Image: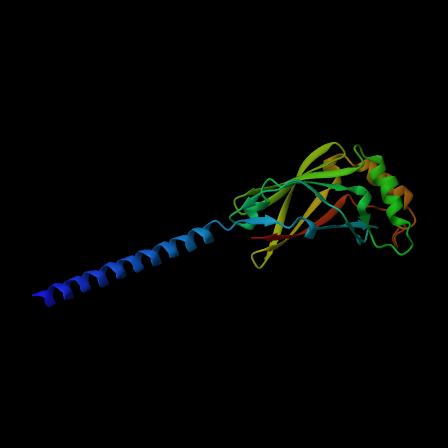
Length: 211
């Protein structure tokens, strides 16, 4: 009888220990799942690259450039990369313009005869917006704010390349377009003898995020 009692007690201990181990395992899995669920994306600020392509002559010859500096005045985090970018606010000092012109004359001309003609000439500012799976930016330039729809390409789950097109006429910047065209009249004259600077500008941004 004593032997049966000891056996029964041992069985209870084994069952209790098994239940305890199972509970610990479930708790461990729950902690791991919670940890994974709370992983959030955030912007790697100093990795963002902003570039543009303007066009000259009636043949629409591209002229590329970039801004070496972009300041983020508001950033967010989110469960997805796009969610993290929603509501991000930024400003770009136009003095950080760089077009890699070997003559060293293009950048000063753009700063004086294009940006210098605009209102609030020091900064271009904007807000990134997400609506469903669509992205866009509200850009403030020349005292005007207009929206630019963006196409995007995901590279992995942490890098996004955005592209869009802005028409400077929407920002009432045609005086500035005429000004830079006049300043670069010969350089913007094509084979047809017509000097032209397009109001259309392609924009591109490369953004890196981290968890």
